[in-house]
Length: 283
Length: 328
Image (cartoon, rainbow over all chains, first blue to last red; front, side):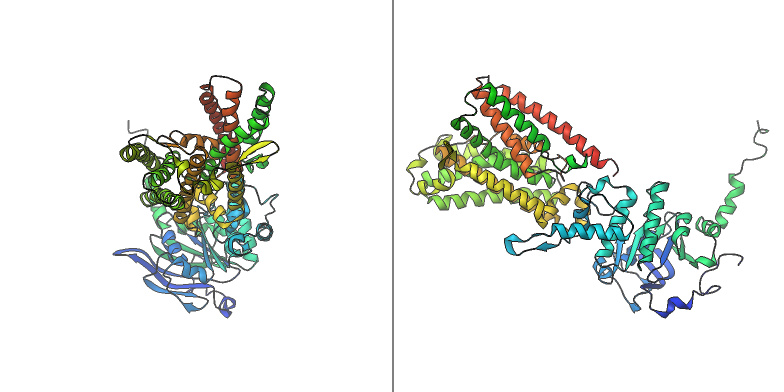
């Protein structure tokens, strides 16, 4: 193994993954906004209990890819298959109905609201009928506590405002919420980028826990080390095109970093950025 | 800390108890049955509005037109019955419809333009204030409507809005019953229904609420209509208590309602507060209003007291938000 090679040419991904239809698969996926081609040539797949990391610098096309996978924007090139069936999403609802949920960076949480109220916001469980229809408070509290426990979070109190939780914990609440409401595949939009080292580590641990419980995860990040910590496969984007999908044993973290940073472009920058040897003599 | 965070009304409860003790000890009239009935009645009128305004504030909006609207509804019933000879019940419905229309207008303007409700309802406040005076003068030639007692059916409607009954030696006015019932209802709606959950979410972080499917616009409409309905109720309670109505009724009270809500723990930025807290805020105001009279102080002290309470409450609220917002 000399250099990172795109999947399918040098390292066909294990036959095990093909045994069952992947949760989500894209082939030659692309998206144009009018005449602007924001994304092209993306091929990747993601099965249950797997983590696909999508890496790329700013403007590499990560957010466009999220929007297509989440159903916010329909794709304009290639094919998208969910559970082996070709799909063309018209709205996030289409993606959600197939068990594909997206957790955005802002997490869609209300800081002052208790944890359990946030967990069920917009989909509250009720008992009773007519004017006596009321929130099933006790049941929702228990469900929230149990769902969080699956990710390894034990809260003292699900009644505390969610704003008092740490950034990592809030991320976990958002993931647990998606899973509870039927997600089989969760797309995480840069869940570690706004966090410090400790909190980011916590989020990576939650991702691993969610993966082990059988969830498929698309983990979008620009940090190759975070990706390496939990990823099974790595999709590298650069300037709107895919540089390939790599299996974990087909690439090293250094190669990933180099690839992401633009590889040759960075090498070419070396001499330019280096201190001129004769800087002092010029005077 | 988190215990206190969850109880917005704790501060108001402590303050209400303190004020109750103070006036009970320092004046002889405050704790007599007649005295208690007086400050409870006074509190009830502010309390009903403060509860509605608190719900709206938790939902992230203001309604400055609420005070003037209590006057408008009273005037509509007064003019419709004494000038046009309309049936009292019909006049009541007409006034309610007018109030709801103004509430819907406020809601529509706020939700469709995205303008701050402070400005929108400040405008409707002045429009109503002007209309109350100008239209009343135009139709009746005076700025007060009297003689409602002679209107047929007045006594029937009075049972609902202006009656009283004896209890523990007190002459308890019916508005106190309305106040307690509405506070209980508002508390139940806020804490135990989906709508209540949405009110907190819409005021706390509207964008997040929208993302998870909360009908933000509908919630705001519901809240503006609630304050309008409460303004109608208070208008009726005042009208049927004294059977006269001034064109200036309610002017200047919009801020008292907001102050009661804030003293009761509502955040000005929305997303936090309670109906019980707003009621306690109104109780504080009502007790101070009557207590100052009983103590035979210059009544001008009331405004200074109100300002002080507000300042204190806002500082407590600020601390609350810092605690919750620390990590967000």
